[in-house]
Every structure is written in C-alpha cells, then in structure tokens.
Image 1 (cartoon, rainbow, N blue to C red):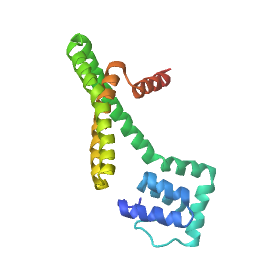
Image 2: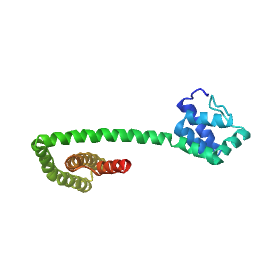
Image 3: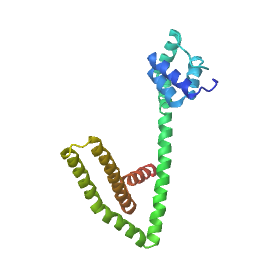
Image 4: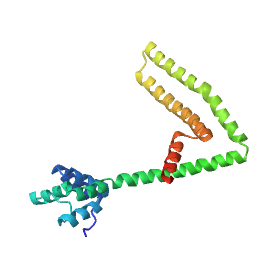
Length: 199
C-alpha cells in the first residue's frame, strides 16, 4: 500500500495525469485522492509514493489501458465521483438539520396558537411594504442627484450598494416568514424525494 500523499502532492499527480491525456485517471485522483492511487497501483503495479516529475511511455500506456477497459473504467468513474458524493452527503445532512429546526419551530407555533409569531410576521410585512419602495426611491434620487450636481459617481455606487444590501435583507426577512408559514420549494422537493425513496 502506498503512503498517503498530501493535498499538494495529489494535485501534482492529477495535473501530471491530465498533462499526459489521462483525463479519467486525473479525475479519479481529484475525486478520491490516495484511494485512486491505490487502485492504480493494484491494477498496474505503478507506485507513486511521491509526486513524480514525469511518467514513462510504458506507465502512460498501462494507465490508459485502465481507462479503456470497461471494468476498470467503471471503477475509475466511481472514484472520480467520490468527492461529489461526499459534498452531496454533507448538503443533505445540513438540509435535514434546517428542516428539523423549522419543524420544531412550527410545532411550537401550533402549540402556542401562533399569536406571537403571527404578530412578528405581520410587523415584518408592514415594515417592508413601505421600506422597499422607499429604498428604491432613495436610490433613484441619489443617481439623479449625482448626475444633476456632477458629483463623484462613487457616491452613487456606495449608496446603491448600501441600499442593495438593505433591500436584500428586507426581502430575505419576507422570504423566511413565507417559508416558515407555508413551507418552501426545497422542503417540498426534499419530502418528495424521501417519498420516492421509501416507495
């Protein structure tokens, strides 16, 4: 078994494979790291206990044969997807935590009769009803004022950025309230996926 290579060495190996036209092997190293190198060593006998500066023509031919052989090609493709699957697993776990948090909040909402939450939601919508148009108007007047008084355009850019951030926060508040009260498309998609899996 090969000694584990670090991140920089693995990137160097993947770069060397790509340079030699061994694209699938490069993707496998990027996706599964040392696991991919162990697979290549097992099938070809090529040892990479350090990032090599080059590959011999024979080594290139052996790794290319792995890419072309249907059985080993499938394994290389699986290795190439390892990191993507891990990222997807992390996203799924994070989504489950978010859904559980929202579920707990909705349960509390139902048990308490929802008076406090409804009042908070009402105030958020009331405030944003005038705030959003007001901020847009301020932005328009700022742009017009800069042009009329020949001021530095950086003033308009700075005000526009600040207003954009405020609009984004205001919209996010409305979106959060809607998702809490009525659910979100992501939650429905997650639930639909779970139902398909359990059928």
